[in-house]
Length: 190
Ligand code: 5GP
Image (cartoon, rainbow, N blue to C red; front, side, top):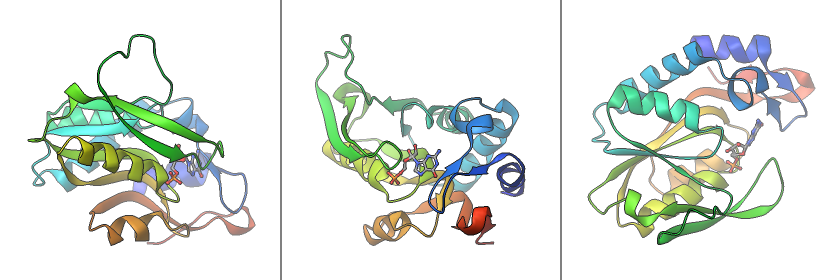
């Protein structure tokens, strides 16, 4: 997606060979027009996949997921990373090791928001080692639902997430694929 790549080139900050900071439009401040176009692009790619629900992870997955949900006309559920006093339902949970925070945490979704008849599209802001995506896929499987695919805003293709998820037979659509962050430069795959 050309507009996204342009935004990454102009507003992304390479923190190291492994980490890209995009706080000005995705992870802290949000660019609604860009998110709208991201939602349209996800919808275009998954229009024929029979999606009935979108699952993402709080907080940075929510904006692109909601925009995709709006375009596809399906509800959006986000997994919580922190236990909430009002989350008293039966929970589906998974353990996820956070790439950026370097701690393991439990993510949780109330069981009543996913049903066996659902075909679920997973959306997230970044794909690195695939831990977050695998946790979300595990939650979908626990619900007895099927996975329509994974929609990723920014994939760091030099990390192993894509290969692992493809190895599980999952379809991955990434809107920007980064080949390298070496030397403070962002290089895209295509
Ligand atoms: P994974 O679970 O695939 O290893 O990492 C994905 C998660 O880690 C995403 O949900 C995202 O929040 C965070 N993440 C991974 N790499 C980066 C990065 O380079 N920059 C930012 N801002 N977040 C990242």
